[in-house]
Length: 276
Ligand SMILES: NC(=O)c1ccc[n+]([C@@H]2O[C@H](COP(=O)([O-])OP(=O)(O)OC[C@H]3O[C@@H](n4cnc5c(N)ncnc54)[C@H](O)[C@@H]3O)[C@@H](O)[C@H]2O)c1
Ligand SMILES: [Mg+2]
Ligand SMILES: [Zn+2]
Image 1: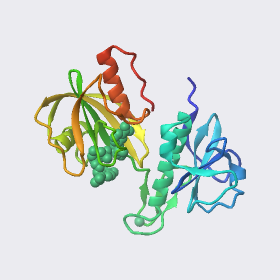
Image 2: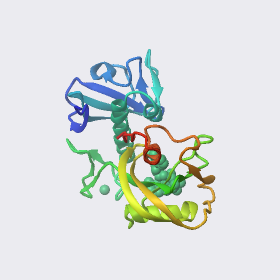
Image 3: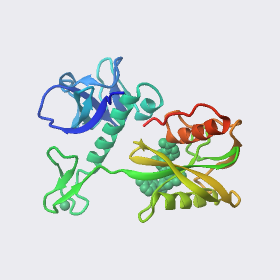
């Protein structure tokens, strides 16, 4: 299948192409979606903080207009990135996920973290630059591990107080400096449910642009210990049989994929495909 979306650093001085507009409220959408003819969009008197050339979709250049505030555009509304993750075209979600990460990063790196002076966008490179410090800041990605722990026909799922009511998911957590993904896995599992795991196997990864995680997905087997839930982080954690599962995370999440994959293998069903 042809790849429809590829990232690139494009010259914003050139005219034409598509553009997406983003502010705190989300992305601008009309009946055709979130991609607008760029020259038209730039005539709409939007309060543009930055413009970035972000890639090609079906061979056409795509730009991001990062706005300071939401404005009213006739026939348009604002839609959050999560909504695009949950439903609609996956290529559009990929474009917008990338746009959101670039927009957030550029906004949060306007000033040098070392000397405090204004940084500038490096021409045709995805970096912000401080001349006095000769310092480049690149887009931030936060590696996070996510793991499905299993014991035969049972899988361990937990809920955070932040989850949608009733939904249970796999355990996850951000890697800390000095850790491998496997170290992180063992530490997070101990912190969140106080059990031990064995036979850790890497399954796959997924970009998670909320706001800049890179999910590294694993499977692990239960090795010992009793569940003790981490105060504040874990509201409930239980073993569930693969044929009696609670409400699960969104279909496109790697959490859901790890669960569906294991369940499919246990029950002899067709294996799911990881959206990435
Ligand atoms: N795609 C998926 O299926 C899926 C599923 C579960 C979690 N996730 C994502 O995984 C990530 C980690 O999961 P979690 O929320 O359970 O993490 P976690 O267990 O490490 O706990 C969250 C806490 O980590 C700290 N934190 C926040 N940002 C951080 C960062 N960049 N680096 C280090 N520590 C940070 C904060 O104290 C926060 O309260 C989150 O981005 C979450 O959205 C994705
Ligand atoms: Mg966690
Ligand atoms: Zn500096």
